[in-house]
Every structure is written in structure tokens, then in C-alpha cells.
Length: 176
Image 1 (tube, rainbow, N blue to C red):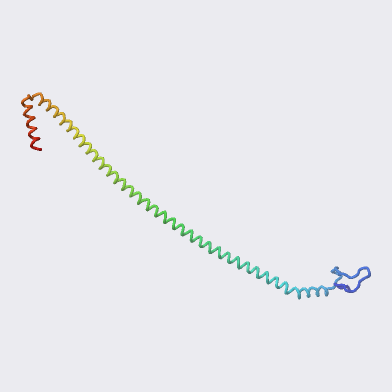
Image 2: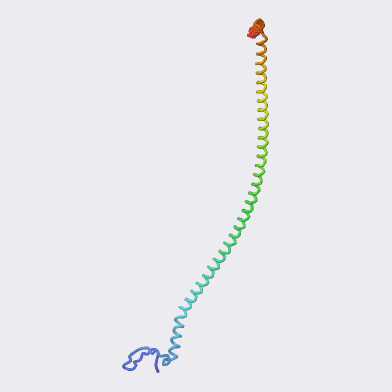
């Protein structure tokens, strides 16, 4: 009978060693080795499996937390997007209201300016008309005076000229 661990001397030429031929080894030796491994390795394998299980559970919890965080961030982002859309719509509405108010104000200012310009035009036309009438009157009076002077000079003799001069000198003396 060959043992798995050959502790007995074998043939002279072979010496001590392990018999690795599975068919030649004893099933009891294998059972003993497996029992020893099971007894010694159970705690080791159990602790490895427990550590691995805890690691997997922790990874799952972390993944679930990251998923929940991502879901919460998505909800928050969607709320912020909706708020931004609402704000944009309100800004657009206010802009349209402001634009209409500005348009109406500019239209009113334009009408007022046109009325003011029309009034200024009428005033300028009246002033120019009055100026033209005054110029015409001045020219007519000037021409009339020139004609009257010529007529007076041509029809006045020296005695009459002296009487007119004396009359004006007396008027000047009375005033001063």
C-alpha cells in the first residue's frame, strides 16, 4: 500500500518523496487532506466570503445612493428648468408689454411733437406775414413820404417854407 506522504523509505534508489499518481494514492489520504483543508480553510474561506459579501453589499448600497442622488439631482434640474421656462415666459410677456407701452408713448410723443411743429410753423408763418406786411407798409409810407416831400418842395415857396420851419421850432421849444 502506498501512502500519499511516503514517510517510509522506499526502494533504495527512490528515497523519500511524494507519490503524485492519483490512482496509486489512497482515498483515505485524500479524504484526510480535504478534511484538514475544510477544517483549517473553513474560517479562512468563510471570512473571505463574508468580506466579499460585505464588499458587494456596500457597493450595492453605494450604487443605490448614487442612483438616488442622481434621481434627486434630475428632479431638481427639471424643477429648475421649469422655473427657468416660467421666468423666460414672464420676461417675454413683460418685454411685450413694455414694448407696447414704449410704442404707444413714442406715438404720443410723435403726435405732440408734430402738433408743436405745426404750431411753430403757423407762428413763423404769421410772424413772416406780419414782417412782410410791415416791410410793405414801411416801403409804402416811405414812398408816400418821398412823394409828399417832392410835392411839398415843388409847391412850397420861400415864405411858406419859413412858416413851416417856425412852426416846428416853436413846437420843439414847447416840448423842451
